[in-house]
Image 1 (tube, rainbow, N blue to C red):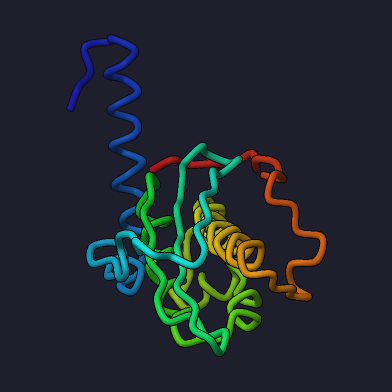
Image 2 (cartoon, rainbow, N blue to C red):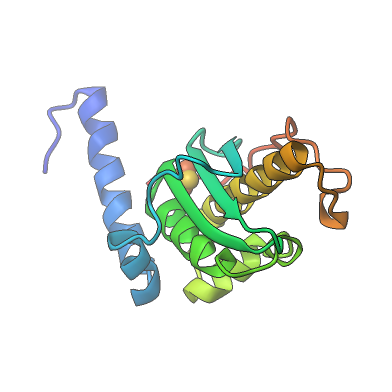
Amino acid sequence: MKSAGIPVFDRIQSREIERKKNMGLYNDTVMDHFMHPRNVGEIPDADGTGIYGSPACGDMMQVQIKVDDNDVITDCKFKTFGCGSAIASSSMATTMVIGQKVEDALKITNKAIVDKLGGLPNIKLHCSVLAEDALKHAIYDYAQKHGKHYKELEGFNPDDHGTAPDDVTHL
Ligand code: FES
C-alpha cells in the first residue's frame, strides 16, 4: 500500500507493517490464546475486581475473580483494551490461576505467564505485565473486601502504576 503522503496514512501504513512483523514473531501458543482467548467476560458477583492501565502504552485490563471458602480461585475472567500479546497473556493467566489458592496465584509473575506462552518478543513483554498487575489488583480488591492479609501483597500500592519502558510497540 502506498500512502498519499498524508501523515495519518503514513502512520497507518507503518503500523500495518509493524503489526505483520510482530504477528510473524508470535509462536503457535500465543496465536492460539490471541485468536481463541479463554475466560473472556465478566463475573457478575465477583469477589474481587482489578482494573489496571499500562504505564507503557495506556492500554487497559480488567480482571475479576471468584473465590470459595477455602481461598481457592474458582473462576477468573478478563476484558481488555489491549494488543494481541495482552489478550494472549491474560488468557493464559486466567487458566493458570483458576484452581489455585489465592496466595499461590499471587506468586504468578509475568515471566511465568510468558514462559507458559512459550515466549513473547522483547518489545511485547510489558503486555504480560498488564495481565500480572490486573490480577494483582483483583486480588487486592478481594483482600480489602474480605479482610484478608497476604504476605505477597505487603507493600503493594494500587495507585503505583510504575514507569513506561522506552521500547513500546502498540500492535
Ligand atoms: Fe498495550 Fe500490548 S498491552 S501494547
